[in-house]
Image (cartoon, rainbow, N blue to C red):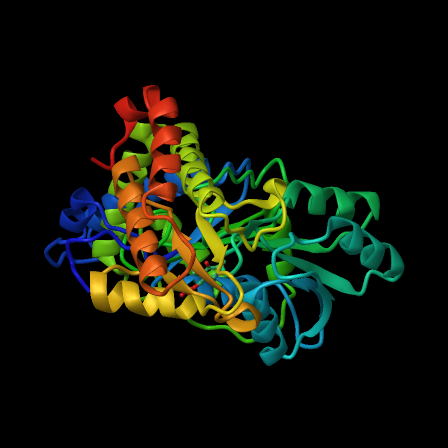
Length: 398
Ligand SMILES: *Cc1c(COP(=O)(O)O)cnc(C)c1O
């Protein structure tokens, strides 16, 4: 693997030079006032990215998986019923985590490539007359299939059913890259991590929590210690942490938030859309299709490209690594071998994206797939030429 090439895995993402330097901080006493100065601005900064109207944000020295666990263990009790949809590897893993916590998971299924089915959620919630379902879990961006689900529609399903369950959303591969409206969508727990849209190394789980979820915390009986929101509430407002904080990452997050604000949050989303659209044009020019079933569910952070039948998508990834020193994502679970994934989130420019399209073309041609060299590159170039401009002036990723 070449350290000079950008990565095209959907997380961890490319770390811009400014953030690589930012996380390199000397040891400071985390009980001193200096820590509070680094820590305090992160709360309003993350709340703006999540578009929260009220509630709290917590940071744990962990990854997104711990964010799932924090959401569940702080608000639910053993045996509680939760409703979730399995339509990819990440939604599957969150369901597995709930089951291992002794929760009773009602699993809805959708094809891998489809979004979370709001109508099925509504039917299940309407059938739950006694309100036994305590939480609804949705994966905003299913990283395994490149599918974005409509969280606003799931909110409407809850409201239409008049159901009081908490709405928990995995936004690990969408938050800070695709529009996320915690307040407007009535999300009670939003989970993300540092190594995707925030462009940092792995090591921070970030959880947005609504007042309703904070109230549920008071009676929740699942065991938690390291991930206990209450210990955060008791220390964070005074500039403290319940144990040793990862100061370098927190400092880096402050700089990442500045970079996002300098570019403009909406411009960040627009850049992700533009870059994703160029990749999608390339996939179309190759004569291939995406795992995502229709444009309304296309993800702007990862594209899962179906390989022609008779070919193995994993071989594209292996060849890219071995021959060209470049990383793409493999197919996971039900779609293993059937596709390869191009991650296009975080710090990325048109020029970087074009190199990924070119590399994927070389690998597919090497494997004997019927791909014309340059076809996808040309399609992406046309898209970037036609749409570059205002966004280029604000791009920070240079
Ligand atoms: C990356 C990711 C996670 C969490 O993974 P970690 O490796 O624990 O950070 C969870 N959900 C989705 C959708 C992801 O893309």
